[in-house]
Image 1 (tube, rainbow, N blue to C red):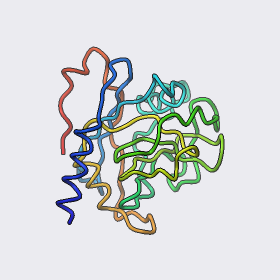
Image 2: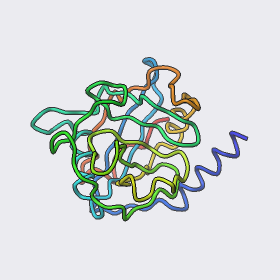
Image 3: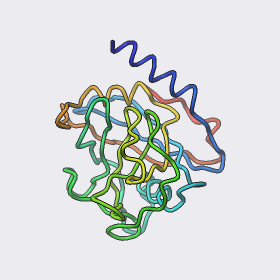
Image 4: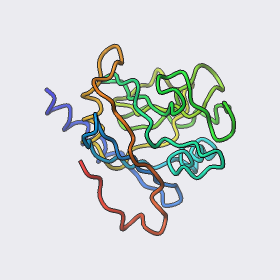
Length: 199
C-alpha cells in the first residue's frame, strides 16, 4: 500500500509541477534526531502572492533586519495523509512565530488552491493572522481553500517529504525531532546548475 501511495505521489509531482523562472526557489535540508532525511526545494508563487512569498523567502534566507530564520526550527506537527506544520522559530510548539512585517499580516489572496501533495500554505489562527508558520500538504486538502493562503509548491525532494510524513501520527505528535538544519534561496543565476535534492 505504501509503495502504491508513494508511486501515485511521485506521479502527481511529474504531472503537475511547473517552474516559472520569475519565481524564487528556496531549499530546506532536514534531519531527524541528528540523522539526515534529505533536502526539499520549493518554488514560491511571487507572481501570485508576492508578499507571502517574500516573507517565506526571507525567513529561509535569514537576511532580514531582525534575523528571523527557519534555520534550526522544527516541524512540530505532522499528520500522515494531511500535512507537516513548521515555522514556529520562537517557541517551537505552534504558539509562536512572527513575520518579517511584524507579528501578523493579512491574507493576501486565495487564488491558489490546495489541490495536491507538496503545496506550501500559511498556517493561521483565523483570518488575517499570518506569521511565520506554514504547512506542506501530503494530499489535496480542499476544505482549507479560502481560509489558508497557498504560496508555493515542492519541485524537488518527494522522498524527503515522505520520510517526514512517516514520522507523524493521527494526533500530530512527531516521532523524533524533525529539524531544518539548513535553508536559503536558490540563487537565480544558479537555478539551472543547482545540485539535485539529496534523499
